[in-house]
Length: 282
Image (cartoon, rainbow, N blue to C red; front, side, top):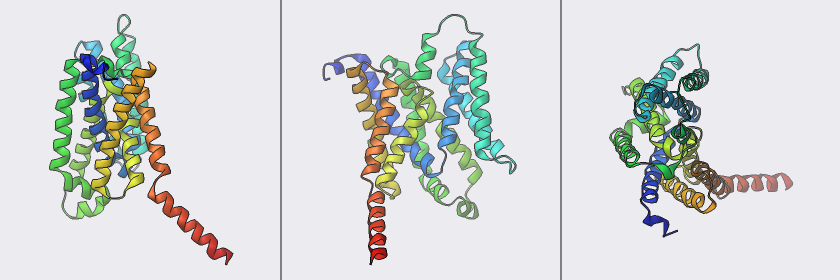
């Protein structure tokens, strides 16, 4: 494996894997605790429309995906504010319509576009120097926003109503969180693909949640597990000659199940059940 590190493409892949795994895991903590997993999946699939639009009009799909995903995220937030439309309904509407929009645009593209499939399914071994810098810039922006507004996001995550009463701009913070999720998805789609990026956001955070209830510890564990998933998955994909994005996500999923099996919550539940059984038997 050390021989692979001599190649520039592998060095770029490892750098993007580290950035992607860390940022997805960090944002994933908020997504998991706030129950926004379906929103993340909806925005991820919406990026397909943004990528197709960029290819059609001749601009870098990275930039068109940022604008498109952010617009869709805000649209979901705006529609779901209506008391007559539930959030999951709004996500479902945008999920289907943006995918259909992307498929519609594909019909206007001339020829076979190999790069389009790298966005859909991911190909971290094919990332360019531009992808590295773009991912790094977005990662710095996302992490900076989370650090600057750490207390506000923490308050909003655990008690939105109390945050509203305390005078926090809850509505603007919600839209900012939707924007952060959108940026995280865009920086990750070249690594794991549109289809699988939402899993990389959710799985490390969900695994960390199995091991601790402390918010800061959960963030740290999530980042460690996220980066580990991308590194292990990347080396496994090189060894098995398998799809990199799928291998990374499967690795993250396996780590979740391992953490779930050794979860203190599960052990405590077993103790309570055993105690209850002994009490009933006596």
